[in-house]
Length: 434
Image (cartoon, rainbow, N blue to C red; front, side, top):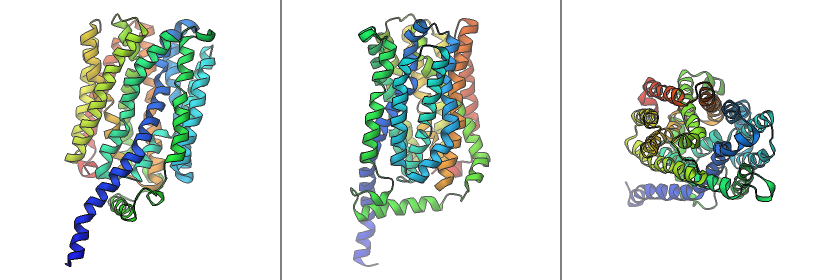
């Protein structure tokens, strides 16, 4: 081998590392901000409930259905949205998604009846449909499997940051803005927290590129390194049509596993402020501060677990441990439901487990799917799994209305997490441990 060839071979890893560092710094912060805004607009209704329910005379059951009906809109429009993203490009379509959901979230301040509340939540879900699988699909076109776990983990930091920043911010808006200009605090909450989605949607449109070849901030050698990695990654995946992807038994199994995750994630997040109030804490800003701590724990968990999974190229045991940690935390939250310190610690354990599942989970279907099969398959998987976003909050709401307490519903959610941990091992390790 000539000296020039040896030198080039030694240089390639450095070129690739440099290229991925640039791509991460350029793409991921914008997507984290987008996810933060998305999740803030999706779950701020949990804080709005603290005033909205009494102002509009909504029962816990009405609130639970309204919080969850978002996911029916999400379900119905997810697949067409992601197929459109594949056709027109992620940059334009993700920006469209953010701009429309920002406007609809702000308009929620106008609702006065239960049916208006249901309609606005349905419309919000329809507007946001395609965002999550669209981002995962977009990241899979920039990062191969062996690097994708930590990148997706960084992206999902937005999920934790939304709780860490959004919880005290939401509590402060409820307290400080109540009555300003004749509007209630919950109305200001919807208006003010919609603004970041609109701003970030414009930034995303201007700053991102759809393909590696379009990135002027990468050198030709860096583009070649990423492209070569992506081509090798695609060569290891089974070649599936969209129809085959939608009927693949492993994709169906993954949908069930993720359904369980989302059932518990939304059941916990939509009701977290209420669970803290049930511990005897009544001040909205204090509730917000306490609700921020579990999200901080989840941020740490996301980063550490995703990094560990990538370094060891192991997915199943890491995921199973997160499901079991979430279950243990939920059970302990019932045991210590009237003790604020221990109850909050239990919620930290539950949140650190449950919120760290999605970034690791998305490495499973992306290890099997590419191209239009990925665009459609990820959308269908996510849309069916997100139907749990209706059932999670609704189950807690119905249970609270029927029994006067949330304990049976929380224990049910914990049991489903244990089931999910077992189902993970039905997925062959050789297919996903990459």
